Length: 197
Image (cartoon, helix red, strand yellow):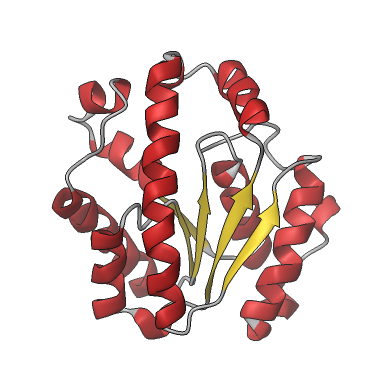
């Protein structure tokens, strides 16, 4: 299991999908799961966060379903805070092979989000609030992961989508050696040409 972190617009969704296809894994996006679950539109559009216990319940169900179906998992944006991270450390720390943080300058993130055009990306104040919350949370999550001997790697998220995917593949091959032979040619398939979370 790999955890993929990054600010909104960093490409987590695009890269998470690409990696899941290359390795034959299940892509589990917390943002996608929450949107599919419904009932949280007002909170999301105002830049707010869903209560931790509800997020944990939604993602726990998805993780166990993927495992029951025999999939390895790439978690996209989960855990979002230290409470959720502590839950993972208390339940499945031995299943987490590593965490990757996609790094993209904020000026580029604002441009990407403007192009993406989702309702929760239209208010600059809402975006800035999401950035601030992420940065506060990741500062607490990373030490917790490292204390549990889970490697955390920062990866440059700037460049062509395929170039970023190649960087991620190289890191994941190190984190999950037995996944290496499942990887196909990064440039051999079609990757969605848009930036996700």
